[in-house]
Image (cartoon, rainbow, N blue to C red; front, top):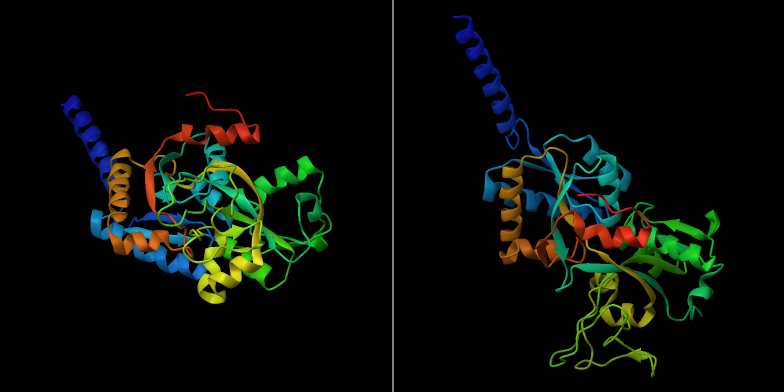
Length: 335
């Protein structure tokens, strides 16, 4: 009799635990989808809500989109989660989450932008500023988005140390977002800004492909004649400057703001799942996100330059970040 009672108690506890696990993704216990404030905050909030609603329609899982206040807040939210959080961490953010959770985080999808699963940091400057080389940045005012940003701050800081450049508080503008950095530069709040960069795309009929190390303004800026290539010869710009085309005009932005240098390359940001997120729900959401990129309406949200400019995804695991760890001098985890 005692054995039957014990078995019944174990079964009840098991059902209770199972019942709790099944509650993740319900209205009472939604899945939190975290978005970094690396682009236009209002757009990120709006698009994040639409993406979350579409994921609910595809999976039946309740998703609560959260635009984090800053990079540190997103790292802490990931680290404090338990089985109910995924998000879109940047490269450096992911490594911080990995450290904070002692490796209890699972990257599943990398961003692909126009065929590339990597990006880099670009140094954007006024072409008429007199800046001709990296050494000319000394004494200038630097604009960046956030100290937690891979392309906006971490990679440039490594370069400054290598070059012996320093910027005091009177020569720094912290903008809060990549797009904000470009707007601040266009408004002459500083002399140059650092933010994400993306390869240019060649004009129609050109069989060449850009590779890292090539001129970041190939097919855009004629360096010999110091002017934009004319229509027909000009390729497509998909770096940070594209975010200002609608407001300021493509020709104006490209004519006035150039790319001095790039730093990288580094792996793209990703879709990652926080500690103890159930594998079956991960698989369900990964499949749904991949399906979103086959839906023109939702893909347009992901690929908007005011959002995260993802044009596709690639399946990854933690080893995807080992090259970046090597760049930073961070040990590669044992697996």
